[in-house]
Length: 239
Ligand code: GLN
Image 1: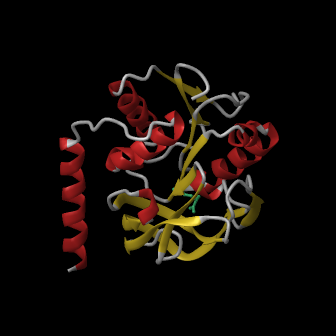
Image 2: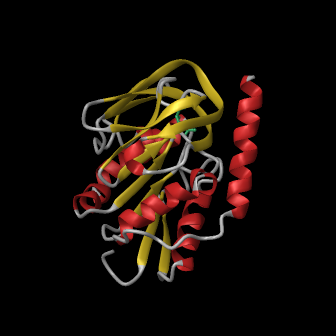
Image 3: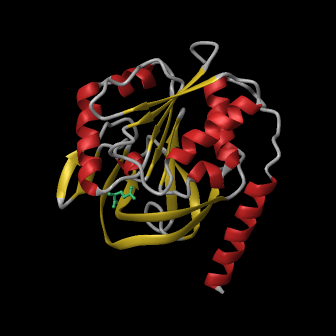
């Protein structure tokens, strides 16, 4: 952490905010405060400069048009690149994940991404809509991922990133892998919002941001119930 206070920036809520992306900021803030960390959450709109000294940056999902505009403004701003160079954590969801890569398609046009992750996104044969589940990279030590996806793009990973998960339901990147991570940067197609449905993933990001080796466990009864319910529903739909 750069200061006593954990600083979370939600990037461009005016452009990139679908399927409860605000929930990701709320979950991180709540889980950090419950561990005794003072937290500040900043919502930075697309006509504002991005602060470069925050600990965690969140980028949500979006329609094609706002996604393209958001990428252009983030590239022009340059602040996220500076923050990443200083070791900040970045969590991107769907459009926010795609735009961290080298390029993506929106409304039939290829756009330049931020080139922070070695991946690129094309249009898929159909929209991927529905439950998304997967077994997360064992090195991250997390329980299975669960979420909801709705995207037209498909994502190809380069050698500079690792897949976040192996898909067990849904499509994710390409039907086989889902999401990607490198260092303290992580992206996923999982909405839901992702960190409400995957509290262990929220704690991974908090651990990266605070440097804490082990965060004290919290009462996740409700989250565990939701996870169990969704996993049962996914299994039933596949049977
Ligand atoms: N516009 C992107 C796509 O359809 C991302 C969609 C989203 O964020 N839900 O692939």
